[in-house]
Image (tube, rainbow, N blue to C red):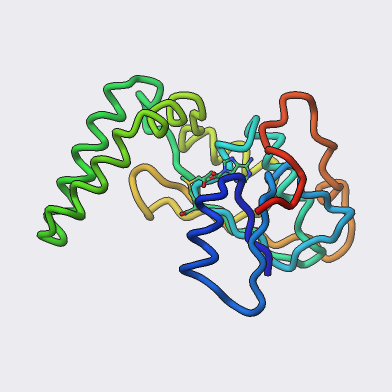
Length: 192
Ligand SMILES: C[S@@+](CC[C@H](N)C(=O)[O-])C[C@H]1O[C@@H](n2cnc3c(N)ncnc32)[C@H](O)[C@@H]1O
């Protein structure tokens, strides 16, 4: 099992909190994973693809990483409208902190959520990496992963799908194209 991220801190957290004998955490960008190095029986991505580059290119690349008969499961943030505005993210930070407090009664937990969602680095990333709308997500995924099964009741800001790669090679299962110059996937070196 291989876990990837371009953040050393996230990799360190994964290694500390989810250590398994068969899990290798690597400093790799999604687009730098080359299907020629080996495809995966299952590809799971949570809230990461909008950060990795142009949506269609990333989706096609992820499709190409699945072995014949392999499973792709993706959950991502979606834009309910207004994502590009700073106000949206400030409102979100306070409503999420309030929700955490309502559920847990834990003021410290609510403060952590607030601090994270108001962190300047988070706000800059959120403004830069705008996710698709739910409609756009359905359209793109429907085209790139024909027959995908959607999940739309996870959260108002999330959408997911599951897809099984064809067992025989078809044009839809063609390997993804090579990274273009606007690749934001980070260095391919295994430095993590
Ligand atoms: C919202 S976080 C989600 C992290 C993790 N999946 C989780 O659920 O806790 C988005 C993650 O995507 C990572 N990321 C951004 N661009 C990436 C890329 N090109 N390839 C792989 N990971 C990337 C970030 O470093 C960050 O850890």
